[in-house]
Length: 411
Image 1: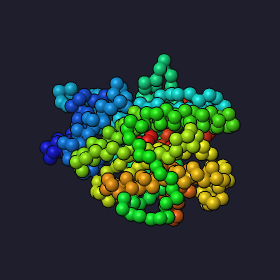
Image 2: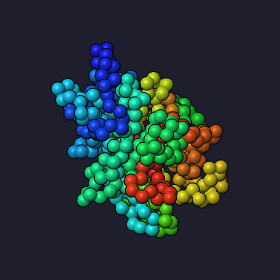
Image 3: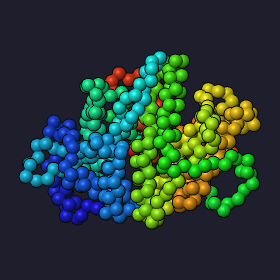
Image 4: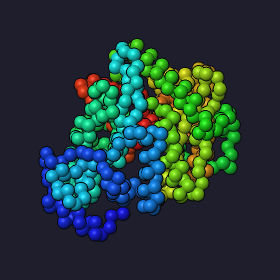
């Protein structure tokens, strides 16, 4: 945390700081000491139940994953370049960006793999808020990401972030990141000794471990490309998605494993569940455990749910108010398979002190699967937390379809 001396030092210097519009402000990369200082600052909000020392270790661990090594993560701070070099630079605002593999189809064109970025850990010292520094930083990072880590000077197509300041505030939209659908469906945890014959008809699911994920990621990416290509051949609508690849899952799991070991003294080994082995008929999900500021806020998050053969929601048989009994047999089997893996997720939630299980932006088939487990389950539109937001770099198309807008994309 910030010491009393540091707070007094900041307060005495605030009066001399330039306006947020000053040309002397610049977005730069922090030194190792400055990066540590940003973590100490934002620990006030994001350390949860971790001690400061543990939080600093966690951030260091997460910065050294396959996803984040070798330029995968970039740290940024806003500073005043006109300040005397004889004293440490004051960090006016800070953030980090994650390089992300992504797919894009510009409408009636082939699906192309591109480099995108996710923005995370946007932070401004409370003593410096209200002066426009965070807004200036977002303007600067938007310009930086136009070409950041793009090959041959290519312009970026899109970048994303996940806002925790709510839909009603226009802070991020003013900088170009506009909100997309941010809903989820929640289920309570289910204790392993909680027996209910109502669920005996569900298929047995196999537990997934880290060693199972690489093959499933390859299959999933192939399915995504095929799905987008099919849509592109039928529509001129622009489609984008981040790729749910192995390194993305590993980053999420490194996060949960670190916190679980710190708080519970054990590391979770089960990473998801799958039903079926026949290509085209498999259903699986991958999850992660998020530990809140209190145990009551612990949530098992479904990073990704894949239902092979799932059709677009325009199919009248898959409307949100549809009935399972109205579906054709093959579709019904897939919906019940999805219910099976989510049932296992509920049990895993109880095993790890998670109070609920959340699934982002559920599809019609997913809603039917959830209602097999909880008939009164409803879709919750988030208004404040993790509002998925996307910025288009360059000439913005009339409409963009964000495919697989699920929790794995979060950073």
